[in-house]
Length: 308
Image (cartoon, rainbow, N blue to C red; front, side, top):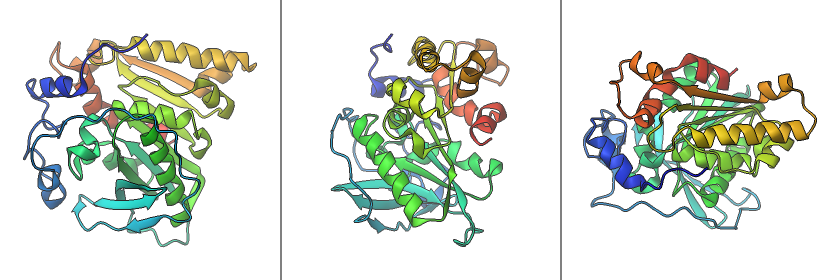
C-alpha cells in the first residue's frame, strides 16, 4: 500500500497552523533557540521549493579522495556546517564529537537522518530541530553523532549517507560493531534505502513515522535488526505501509528458514495507539506525525532498543 498522495511541503506547512512550528524549521523563521547555529541564523533567503527524490545510479567507489571542509558554526555541541566533497558531490552534515574522544579508544557512531524539515535546502543546521541527535549520548556517552543534511529522501541521498558513514569510519577510531542508524519521516525512507544497499555497515536501524522503501531481501540477507515505530493514525503515511513492510520482512526471514523467535529478534513493529499521544500531553486529534517526531526521541523503550 502506498502513502496518501499529499505534498510534503503542503502537509508540513499545514502542521505549522496546528502549532508545531517549533519542530518544523521550514515553517517559519526565528523559532529556534540555538543561537548562531540555528536554522534561522543560517537559512537561505526567500522561499525554497521541496526537491524531487532522485534515483541517481552513481555511487562513490571509495572515500580515499574525499576532501573534508570543517565548519565553524556550533549549535549545542554540534558543528553544523561541515562539508565533505566525495565522488563529485558535496555532502553537508552536522557533527558532534565528545570531548572525551582522543583517538585512542574506539567510539560508537550514530547516524541520524532527519525528515523533510531538515533537508539542506531548508537552511544550514535545520536538521537539528529533531531531538534524536541530542539524546544519543545519554545512552552511549562515548559515541560520535552525525546528522546529515540530505537533498531529498531518494536513492542518491541514501548513497550519500553510505559515503558519509564510510568516511567517518576512516576518519575516526570507530568500533565497527557499534554503528547505529535512524531515520525519521522522509529520513526513514532514506534509511530504509540505505539498508537495501549497505545494511552491514550498521548494527541496528530505527525507522520512525515513515514507510519502508528499501530492498527487504538485502536486509534479510544481512540480518540487521529493525525497529519501526509509528502512530496508529499517522496523518501523513498512515500505519498500513509499516504493517505491510513488517509482514514482507518477516516473510523474507521465514523464507530463509528462520524461526518465529529469531524473526521477532530481528524486526519489531511498534504501532502506537491514540492513547500513547494523549497520555503524553498531545491533544486528541492532533497530528500523530508531528507527535511521533517529538515524542519518540524521548521514549526510552524506542531509543533504548536502538542503542542496546
